Image 1 (tube, rainbow, N blue to C red):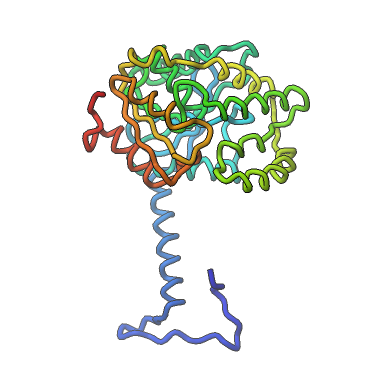
Image 2: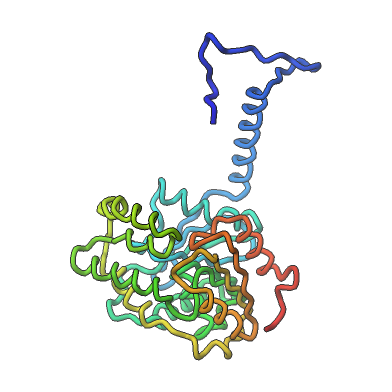
Length: 319
């Protein structure tokens, strides 16, 4: 973007139009920027400030917006608490804000701290089911991405009464081979050094081999600054996820479920994701050829999720 302030020797005074308002591409750009800032301020005021809370069982949440509740379960995290103010929280709000603008009260929900080291994946789902049942007292929409998507699949298998409609994004009936390998490598790093090995995620998130090789060294270095408050929580989740598998139960899952996948996501092969959707009686698959694992900020993703949750455009079909 060109700088808004020019050198004094080249600065030009915008010429006014018939109404006396200066015109010109640079002036128009400033007006557009100001208009966008005012729109953002207005929308932020309408949504209200993010609200922090804790569900039963200790699950922390960050809520935004007003309307029918939508539980957002994120991917793997190094810590089981709400994202702190600053960069991490801004990234989180960037993900959930479009859903809140669409008329949902979005609860960005992390796992609970102090997790037992020998917890199972059904145990993780049971903790979420208890929290949702006690807080809402009725079925609510649940959207999960990556690790959160695996929780969604276990939820609708074991506790369908807490879920109104489900969205499993970048997930399948079990871990894909690349996802499993990445998690086990991260597990070894946590157990031996206490480091959250973020570079292990590159294999699933970056499509080009040369770029994966180029990104790993700087990410390995940067990961030393990722603070892991309680490595037991992260280790427990990785171990539990390794045992997650609901493939044999897919034909019996009766919850309306949307499975969303980016074709450039290397964590899961398309065949696994497609089987997940089409073996569920009320499953549906949407695939984006141009997107990868981090598809949740795409406008297409938001539009399709909102349409599905609002039962628009034929999303209610079975089979």
